[in-house]
Amino acid sequence: MHFIDWLVVAVYLVWIVYDGLKRTRSANEIDGYLLAKRSLPWWAVGLSVMATQLSAITLVGTTGQGYADGMRFIQFYLGLPIAMVILSLTVVPFFFRARVYTAYEYLERRFDAKTRGLATLLFLGGRSLSCGVVIAAPAVILSVVLGWNLTLTVLAIGIPTAVYTMFGGVQAVAWTDVKQMVVIALAVCGAVVALVLGLPREVGLGDALRVAGSVGRLQTLDFSMNLTEKYTVWSGTIAGLFLMLSYFGCDQSQVQRYLAAKSIDEGRSSLMMSAFVKIPFQAVILLTGVLVFAYYLFTPPPMLFNPVYESRVASSERAGEYHALEREFSTTFERRREAALAFAAARQAGNDTGQGEALAAFKLANASLTSTRTQATRLVREVTGDAIYDDVNYVFPTFVTTGLPVGLIGLIIAAIFAAAMSSAAGEMNALATSTVIDVYQRHIRRHAPDGHYLLVSKLATGLWGLAACVFALYAARAGSLIEVVNKVGSLFYGTLLGAFVLAIGTKRATGHGAFVGMLVGFGTVLWSARYTNISYLWYNVVGAMVVVAVGLLVSAFTTKRVLL
Image (cartoon, rainbow, N blue to C red; front, side, top):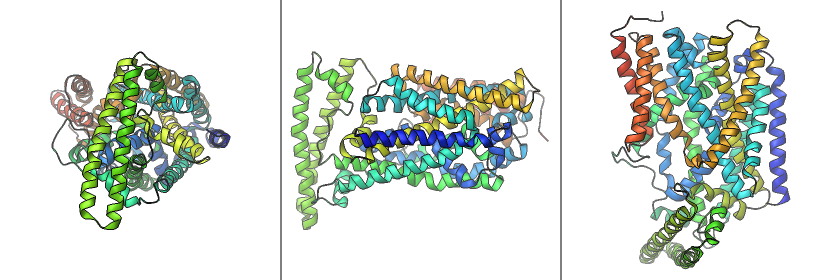
């Protein structure tokens, strides 16, 4: 990268830490540190909710997915608006009126201490894993693309985030999230403009999209009833609804945001903002990936987007095979490029026959190119021993560092940092809150001065930040960075959702029923993940339904305990 790009990244990191540390004046009491004294405006909470969810995995991985698979991933979010309406009518007023710091406090009031403790354990387990992964994934990608040491990259993301979160609390998290969302939005818009301007003069945007659409990149909806297919209308609407209800209704990293809002109505408005803004924003990110695919129709792409693995294979004993694939790839790319140009020329001339012939030639060349890249990927896996290697996460960063002008490169790298830091900050803050309120205050020191809990909260935030960095290094070197955060969360979310359905949705459930239901539900989800091929989105449905069914059954044989 150019010096100016490094300067942009450095200025961003200094600015965001400085801005977060300014919030320490508003975080000198436990209520201010954990919930901002319930004073945040709805739009800031809404942007913070979106920023916490928008990890660097989303920014980098989703653009890569748009490049490789098109717009189908948007179906993942179809259940989001419905979930936000349900949560606005149910858990938001429940939690506000209960005046709780964490969602799991309510479970003890409704049931008992063991149910709260199990829910806390599930949250801390799932969210700590997730926090490490949201740091590990962008750290590995940036270390490869920028040529940084992996440990340095992890620390560059994790330490500044832990510092401003530790001292500024939820105030720092929320207001830095707002600024980080602006940085991300500007970077994405800049990338879209650069991609459109990067097309050949003789090719219009409509021509490029039409060619991309001919190989499925613009296909959005899939109505097939296939539980093993990740992204369909049904998985997004039904299973996705359960995931969104679980994530936004039961995960402390999200609940803590709208508990910091000024009122019930402002908490509801913050969720509705996500309901109506998240899907269009996600569509733009996916479209960015599709435009990267269109860009590489006319500009030669690398056969492998990971330069580290490319060099390892090129210098191995099987270098001859690799170079033969490179020559085949280059020849096939030229055929595909000529077909795409021929289609654009025929379309502008109004030649329908020419368009059809050009598209047919393009599809054949694209299939051949895909086959060559698949062989190259298989070769990488065999040479390196990395059985789960996938090139998709390196597509967008490679385009950024090779196809964008000076300055914009730095802005987008800063946006990747912003996406990683915003997600990690929200998770560190939520982990610390649950640790102090649900564990330390509940089981270790029940009565202490406000200043004591404030100090413990800051220490817990710092410790969780260090733990996230350590786990990120382990996860990266263990090859687990490819795991999608939502898949990790889905192992836990359905069980938590079932517990809250029992707590809020029925008066017949007892503490014993909820506890046993959670144990059986979580076990069932783990069994489903290990022994079935159903998509991870359905884990949330399985977990929630088992918890509710078993919980009601056990409750029928135990003493009723109803919150009046």
